[in-house]
Length: 263
Image (cartoon, rainbow, N blue to C red; front, side, top):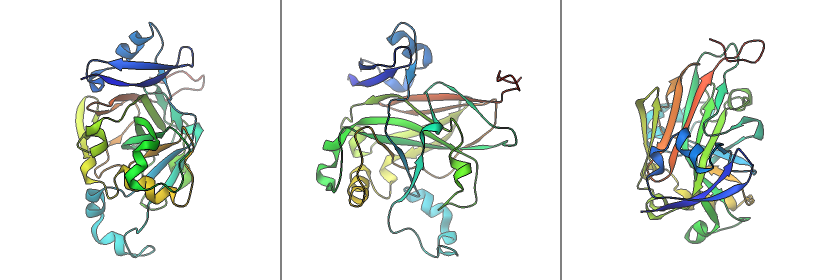
């Protein structure tokens, strides 16, 4: 089958239509570079990027009794939202600088919706009509003991939200959730997340959230990450992939005083 969508070129900053005859999950930076004869994809959004915490059934199960302990005392009854501001956004094959004093980074891999038009008070049955396509996000953060409200300084470090490499039109398998997200670190598979196991699927999330706020065209909504999120260190390479959707790959680095990658 063909996979159609669009990508923003880092070479000229323009949006280009893309049609691929192979599964984009197998494409690396060199393959995307060849699409424009030089230049990698850039962040494919200019809107706001929202995350949803605790939206995976297995993640809730793994927390167990902790969900009933103070200060929250009960599992969430509505979507738990947070924001990844523009300072956190990184290109799909960019190096991510880890600040000094941080030795471990948590990877929250997610499939994300990109809205094609303003969306407010939408029912689940028509929710997909408002979606331009799907992309991948690696929601990086400093590990925190708070699973409801981690400190902003742990979630919003510069570059800690790689997005891309493109926005693919949501074919039937992606809409139904019958796909699996995989996270590899230095080539080793460390996490598999089934989209069938979401507490609220994409359409239900759009219905529940758009009931009280408006998504603007270009906004991005992550569907949530599963349990067992990989912990990585500077010097390691993280790959997030999904059949039919693509591969997002980034290397975590340190830099020296001059801004050059540290050995």
